[in-house]
Length: 113
Picture 1: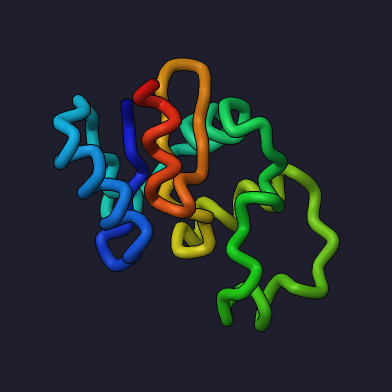
Picture 2: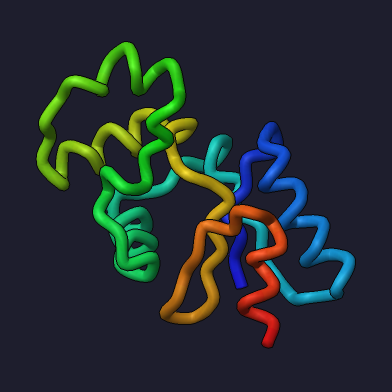
């Protein structure tokens, strides 16, 4: 299991705490410090079964100021997310061929059944 983690995000910290408390084996990907590649992001999107736009945090000021009025293609939204990882919905948890946005953090337990 991999958790894509932003240490400044309370939901990410909550999901990570659950994994640690339940002794669930996991790997932490600190995507803010170690940015995702285009292929990694495309793989995550496929596992989430989402389009790139649906992974954008639309309440963020950056989105509102620079992207809210844009009609971008899938590849352009991927480039926006790669250039601005703070716009990624989080935390993302991946297990095998499946992934979820673990919000609320307890949603991470879906993979533990």
